[in-house]
Image (cartoon, rainbow, N blue to C red; front, side, top):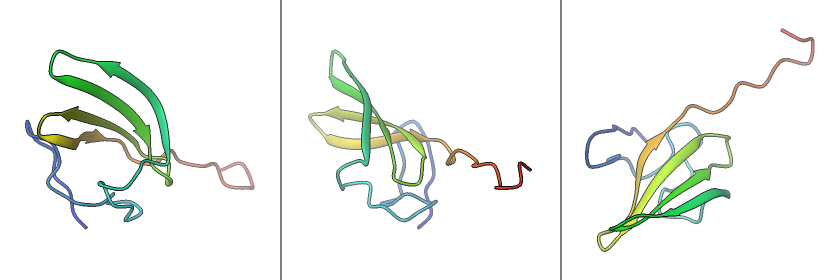
Length: 77
């Protein structure tokens, strides 16, 4: 479940943090923007990772993703 980011997007097939398949429906669509070639969709994975997806004639590709947001411990640390 590794993923690398490059000019053509990620080569992994799942979120490296939780294993959710990249081709599955995203947990949450944050925003969607039209482009000349299709659209850019910002999504959030179930683990909290923010992703940028390019949607065009070639299909949907995860172009970039963040690490999941760190959740503070119950004791505040």
